Image 1 (cartoon, rainbow, N blue to C red):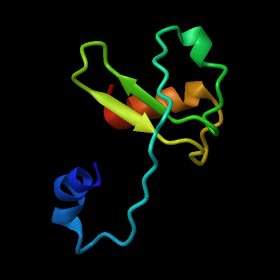
Image 2: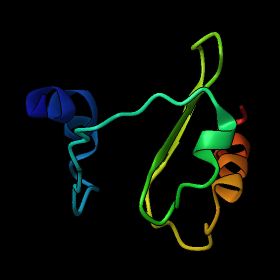
Image 3: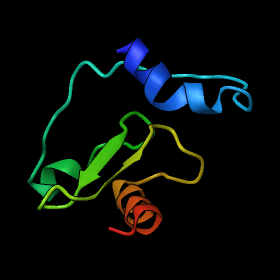
Image 4: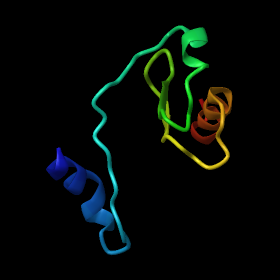
Length: 83
């Protein structure tokens, strides 16, 4: 996986990259029921939002400055990734 990350993303930009930080996600929970998802804390949980047809997606890491609710997290992802 690290080789894929390096050859696919880092190698072409390594002259301008200062740091690479990543986390391995162990527990992915697919949640289609929005009422179960909204009470979660975006300070603790990251969010991956994918369009129904799977053509576009966006991600927001946990503990992003200014994001206190899942509603804010979803709105940020939708705007940033034009979902």
